[in-house]
Length: 316
Image (cartoon, rainbow, N blue to C red; front, side, top):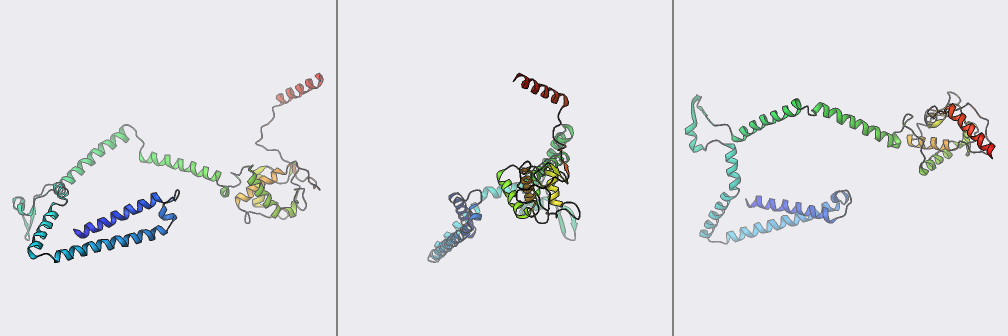
């Protein structure tokens, strides 16, 4: 028992030392032992000291015991035996109660007449822990049936479907906000200065040879007018950058060289060139692109607006 007590003291000491380190060392959201691995060494040294102390205590007890007279040693051993009997007395009594059964001395009272090759059978009662567990399963079954089959509670199948739907929404939201997971279906125009600056850097590194630094066009088309060969808008421009231009005479596909986030940035930057005035603009190519998702003008509202403008001009 002295050895068990020693082990318990060492374990308790290590737990206390661990929590002291966690509360004393500022490690942010990480555990201190993760952020500062040197703490492992500190705890190891503390453990060695604690083991040395326990060994010293046990050695001192042994020396004192051997220095005692035989009568004193006998009295000491008797006192230790009594203390061991008293240890965990309540727990031992509770254990015997829940396990049930009779002591070996009383087994003669419950021996049955069955005898198989000298093996006899005892008529023990079921252990109380088993009986209580059986009653608990019956109670659980009644509550479960009432909750999920009588009062229409959310069962496991419905719970799974709800969690799966929530997970799909979380995935979609993550895909929408994760820049490197953007594709032609989810790309949107980026307006942050940092994104446009990054897009400009990509453009100047990879695109100026064909489109010139101001987007006026050279080998490639003019990017500042309203005409587009493969369609305008962020989705078409992103697709053209990713998949390349027309077969045989369009630009290469950049999806092997640029990340999705970089393609979204350079596509957004290209759209900012619309309406600017390049030094040597190339003639328009393709067709004027009209955004199909843009709100359409109401002819009646346009007539009213024109009439209002005429009245204002006349009055002036």
